[in-house]
Length: 484
Image 1 (cartoon, one colour):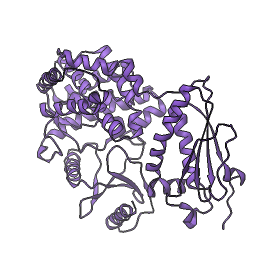
Image 2: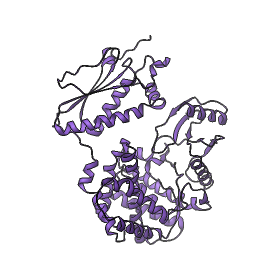
Image 3: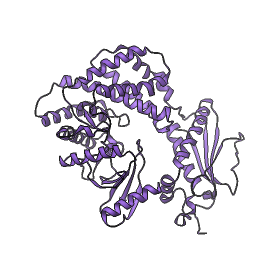
Image 4: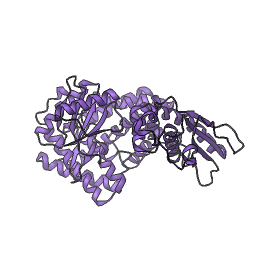
């Protein structure tokens, strides 16, 4: 991590002539790229990506779209090895942030409407003169790419369920559906991962797009499906219907002709289905195979989203085995399989999460049950050895940033969550009353405090279980740490 920080800082200094005032490491998303915000006049986003071919695609698309006056960032500087680059900073308020912080209000609806209008401009104007030979994978979202998404769903989610189905008939249905969707009347630039977290909103309310390097030529309905049916967004049926109409209005106005709206809607529904299944495949791969907890917990949401779609819409083509398979996927039994057990007001379990110092020894279990967990954080790089952090704690931002950005604390905690989750779920089901989960470090001040806080947050969010949080060293000192 420090190497990346040094490299992106050097690139900023080379570009601007002065070093940045400060730097923040931004949270990592689903990709392997890492992002940094470098503060100065102006602040910029620094990016590290070791896939130089992906970077080159992003550079080309960005230059092309900027020449068309479209809402994408300007590329400000690129390192000689093409792995680091600086881009325009649109702030940290995404369309998803506005939706989750303000709800489905008229103000937020207008932001979505502006987004659909900007999307049409990107798709149609961005398509003009674009050399699709620069695409990262497929040049076009045609039959081959559609089949790839369907097979992604099959291998990484459906087959993991271990439920019987007619494999040959399903492949034939996949072929029929991909043929049906390939023959769409309109093909323009397809963003591919058009979801509300990739749409930035400036304080003035302007819409901007990021992370479009996976784009290719394809049906415009796919991007709209990705936006309106994003599971995390949870848009109401009324919003989805009205925004679809808003999009078609903008599309007709931009291309200068009327479209067959019934056909457009039918093909849109087909692309909604493809997108929902692609997302399930991604969640299956990241969650079931790579064992990343945040993707596992997203699976029930994606399944309910798929069930809502099937309760209301048809894809316009008969695919009986495919429909049978999807009925299995959205069954109550399968959704329950991926839904974590959660506590109710009647659940007796109390999880006692605490931090401690190994100098003082373990905290005794007063419940009479014995056992529980104690995790040793001393294998994590110690921020307490940094002079300016010696009097801080695991709740202070510099310490949290240090642990999140410069250590393996995140990987450590993800493994700990997996272990503790199994026990908490079992204890809720069996009516147990007490469980202790401790985190120890040398002084009980930095690493263990951070880890205990994160564990308490995780258990409350995932299981809705009662948590008692204590920091034995810090509570005894009233959180006052004197210089050594």
